[in-house]
Image (cartoon, rainbow, N blue to C red; front, side):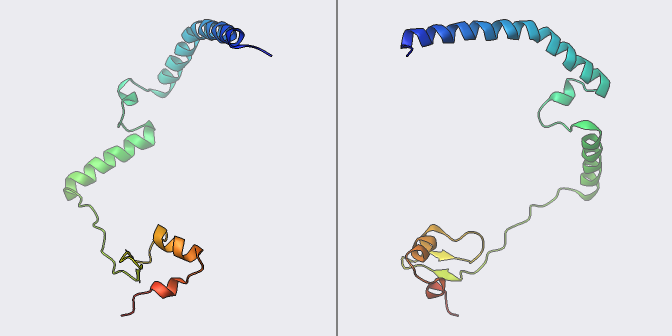
Length: 121
């Protein structure tokens, strides 16, 4: 069985090997990337975060810019408030949409019925 000193020696040896491989393959990888950038017409500006990617992305971005200018600023869709349909023993409420809340899931796991907590109109 190896001891800590042996393992640390192995780690150091492997890290040196990894650094050598990386330095050998670095220039080759850069050349491959540059060749692909040239083939696809990719510029450094295209690689910036938030920029449209590819021909389809550029077309969509241009179309979006045109429609936004013509229509003005789009308004965010506001979430409609939904009335509560279930009420828990401690006053918690749930609309019945989405995942059941933890308080209800815990009560259901205890064998209680969801209908017990339905709010009667």
